[in-house]
Length: 525
Image: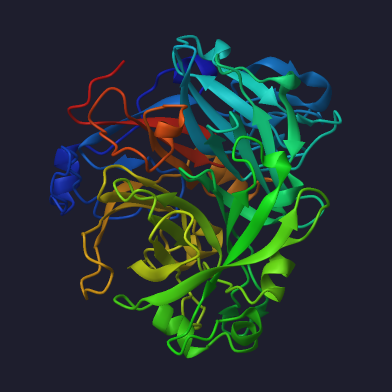
């Protein structure tokens, strides 16, 4: 049976104790940085039945919202009535063959506005896109979640949302819709100084940023918008071909993105200086360059190529990037700037093929770093900082917990869960200060072994096809909530043991529970 709303309010997640983890063979596997110590959780949860989440002993978690919480201001006519469900068809909320559409709150954005502490999310699936806000100061869970937006400027539904970030220059939430032109793209919802939606929460499309399989979206201090695309390429006998790009939008006016600018795509160069193009790697998905790119200690020159300029008119970014000889990758998903680098280092995940049967190079993806002289530089270099393998793959959301501790979480999918008999995990990669050319790759330290709640288990085994199965980890987010340009992720060094900095993640699918992690020694509000 699913927990009732009131029973689950403020519930601390079921975790392995430190003694239990060490009994299973765990040991401290990461030294303290800024007071954060993480011991390795020795094993992922098996794909079997209902499993509890297991966190490193130095962390606990508390639920802040979950799927069946009602919205305080529902759009009943369109079924936007709950945090994690659309009830337009009148179906029951869970564990029935005709259960309601689960809407899957995705990435988290933490902001302190009007003296209140809020968590914003876009919703990834269901009949329509929408944005919610969790009031973290509200003790009554039935009054905690508010609908911010579910209509566009014309009053119509807009696509479901995959990525979200806060743009302090425009005072807008930027939302990505993972779909090609003309449906997908980037939308903006303005917030006032109290954290409430302006213009009735109507989401405005930003056509100058194009349409694609957009997922990750992130600002830099210059006002540029970085976008990471996730599109699986055509399947071959050995896996999928690279088909997704990393983009940078350079606005004409960083305070008004409707004034247009340049959309650029990342181009990677071979050792001889020639660009790696889609035509090359899609014709030969075993191109030796792909293996070289996924080898620790290598580094390749990069350049930003402009694929579109202007202000209006829908266009397909993926097609434009291919035509401009940008370099496709194997499903990059999310990115973030490393603190302390002045926005000169951008880290992004590459999901890979999410199949143990793939024989292509780069099948398990990894984490990459783009290094530049400045955020707006036209050239730079790319290197891999964490190489995926069968047990560490499907990398999705990403966040820095300190200047050196990179949190990376998996979305490996039900198929790979079955192949490896392991559900998703979250890892800490402790980065050094080298230039990416050393031969010592950082070792993944598991801080979270995700479980599987009853709703996700039902969907995995016999639920309706329109709802996903196993839980996945998404929305890993570390922030102090500063809504000014000084608070852009990467501008400050996080201090996870102080009361100001907070850590969140979402156990997507199933109950769609969003958790706050508290690290040992941290004071609470």
